[in-house]
Length: 312
Image (cartoon, rainbow, N blue to C red; front, side, top):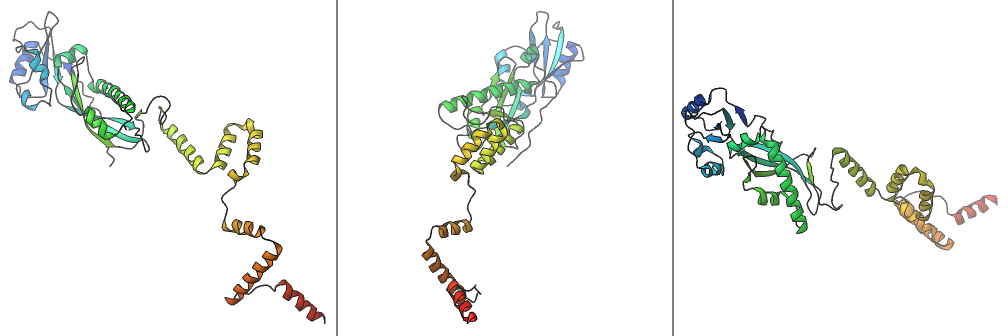
């Protein structure tokens, strides 16, 4: 089943709060929203997080670890904060196009569907992560390439089941405050995806673009058509070697001869018979045609007798 790729959420992860810090604190305390955290910057350069009141019941799986680990009380109303930021906590979804290369069979184009969210709002602001999918996608590509290397070393295929088995658990990015997990791997139409192929020259080309796929399909067609197509393709790409191609053609007539028809096979069989065997076969064939009511030209002996009779 083919499914479209989910578009990236381009809403910024954080933005500077429009009001004074103390007003934002009051707003956060009274708000019923559960999808935004308030991050406050104090005079010492430290960031403090004020989580929404209803966040614990709506947070994604594993997102509350940063909140539990901080152990800080909510910011005070008149804490002398120099800046305030609103950080989006809602879970985002996106998909990374990937081309898997199993041990057997053609490459498989899939969409790796990812759920990701903020687990540390203060770190998001500190690291200035405005668009999280770019960071998550880069981490995902790196992990997929590492997984492919591990499976190749163990002589195991890289398929959708392996991707889900190794990457369905949440992955915390400790340097930017984000967490993500692979939720599903679905078949998709190939276009411009990341190719996961073994290193060392094995498998399919590393730059698997649409033009490269067309070249591959053309080469596959030439191979299926046999040596004649391959010789023509070689001569097209190496016209200066026409002499060598002609010499090879003369020396390998059995390889480049086109497929024979039943007429060719009959002619070859008749050519191997002696003159006496040909006459006998001709007589048998003539008698058979006469039995089924088909007209035949006169036999050589009958034609001679008829000529002699008319001459008398």
